[in-house]
Length: 99
Image: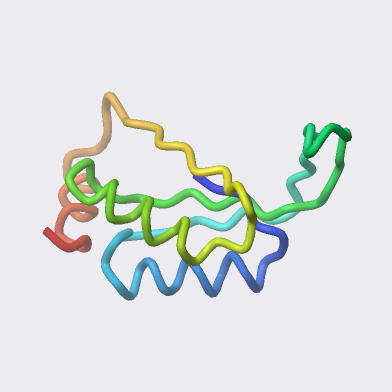
């Protein structure tokens, strides 16, 4: 999961990660409001949340590339590991990421 400053930036990076098969899918959720500390000040901004689907084996490559592409100085990159999932969907994710 990661946050982006706008839909265009999120879409461009998501497409790159999917094209490079570092992620099988990206879901973009516009309209998120973030309130956070940054450099000693409380900030507030509208952002786009992106959920990426990748494999455990591909995660480090995915993370490095997302960090490289991301416009933020310190991007939010959080991995959530599913404990359950539809086997056919999980197989689809595996089939659509580089091994």
